[in-house]
Amino acid sequence: MIYTFEEIMSEHNYASPNEMAGYTLHGGLDGEGNYISPRTWNRWDAINEWSNHLISKGHPLLDCSVEILKYGNYPNFNQAKYLLSLGEGAFLWNSLTITGVIEARGQALAEIVAPDFQEIIKEDISKTATGHMNKGLFVSHGYDEGGDPNSERGAHDQMWFAARDLLFGKDAYPIPEVPENIGRPVEEDDKWPIPIEYAGLVDLLMNVLMIEVRAECFFQFSMNIAACDDLFKDRREDALLAAEMIRRIRQDEAVHVAYLNLIVSELRSFNFKTDQGEILGSEFIDPHWNTMVKWHGEEIHHELKDQRIEIVQDTLKNLDNSEKLIEGFHKLAS
Image (cartoon, rainbow, N blue to C red; front, side):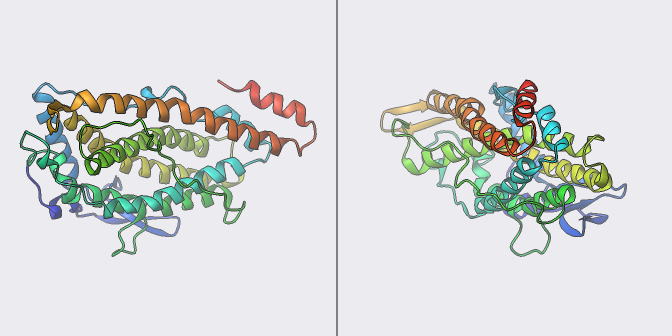
């Protein structure tokens, strides 16, 4: 269960390249034309092996399904159809653009060097995902999101922009302002029994994991919108290609959720050496995880929803029968 950096980063022997909408993208196709995610020749096998080992010792994986989110996408599917039927697509353009920019920032994950967790963990971690953070797991994740700087193949950032342009055409709307951060900020009352350099990384891992869980909602929402026969009627072929582009991103992201979930789950099972003596990881990780889930699954939803309602109402106010249109939009809320 010990892998080298090169093994984690290794690629399949693709039958053909992943070329879509004029882009040459990461990953590739097998002999039957099925998409294969990049750098997964060994990565999935390693994650599954480590996961099975953890479970065999009686330690379950965290629930990282979308079921842990209290709310889904806003606007919802029917509200989005309503806005698009009125010719108002800026909300979707903005979401796709912001997602692409944030994905590009994700390349920074490749630059992270984790501190040596073996220094503060009692158990041997050499045969765990935790012990492989610096052996390709972070680098492969970063390259999946923002691209390999040594390759000309596009990654998720370009794929989101391509999907956006397939739906709307280039420069259909202005580029929106992109938030500086979409993760839960560190609070003064966040207390950890482990040194700050370790605590900071665990907090980052949980934030990124929850961002990935939230993204799953947006993947399905975006795919449903692009594939809907009632929408983008003059661009159906391009819209279906956009849906497939997003499906491939979604496939790639599954390995990110899997390894992040696994590391946090492993950390819960380990005994940590602290100034207060040995502490089981779950004793201090679980409260932080619960706080993280509540923030990403509930608190930030309300904040973003209020912002989006204001934008939608300001947009619809410029149309005839604006009050009726705004009322119709809100009636579709689930």
